[in-house]
Image (tube, rainbow, N blue to C red; front, side, top):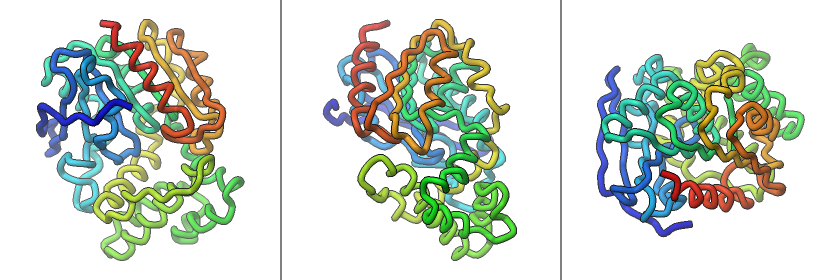
Length: 316
């Protein structure tokens, strides 16, 4: 990866509804514009994202989506209203930020949840997107949410049973993200803390199936953990606030946008058919399935992403 660079510009953009979205720009001020869409939802845009881009070639925009990272108010505060935090709000935020920065079109780099947001954004505003590089793909459909919160219990039965039993018995047969979201809104801080820990424990376990287990150190931070879990459960309980299957059904709207899709064959969190089906429906996309990789950038996925970004760097 490229050496770490520091932002040369940053700010908080007032996007309405009482929300201010943090953004930063690094790399070449006159370079090819690109925007990073982080995962989660709620992970925030960490400095490591900058290292995917040649700093001499790209003008890279990192943004913390509503409610997370350095954006305000934090979703970790139970008083923060999540009714104004949906995929549709995030799409509008991106367009407002693009206009604020005077960018005509930008490349979209997204991972995991960032793929869902990136696809929804590009289908809504195809003229704003020059290229897309997406890895560890998700569409956040009802089927995918059911898989990652329920059906995956067939692979991790003991771990999933602990996850299921983190909610009241009456809720265990229903929408588990919604049940956890209710616990995360409980007036008792101890109930909220226990729910956030149980959710993050399950997250660690299913993400690490294809790689040696390593707990995400960010989950030890109570503020990060609460914002992450409130946003993830909010979006998953509502299947990203999209019509079910709409991202695949509307893939034809991406025609003319070159895309690189990178996915691990051993990705249990998001099975490879998600990426495969999208590649069949998107005429300008190329798919690389990385044989021994799981969910995330390890196992060779990052190498393919870097190569794609280097290739697109010369395309103006």
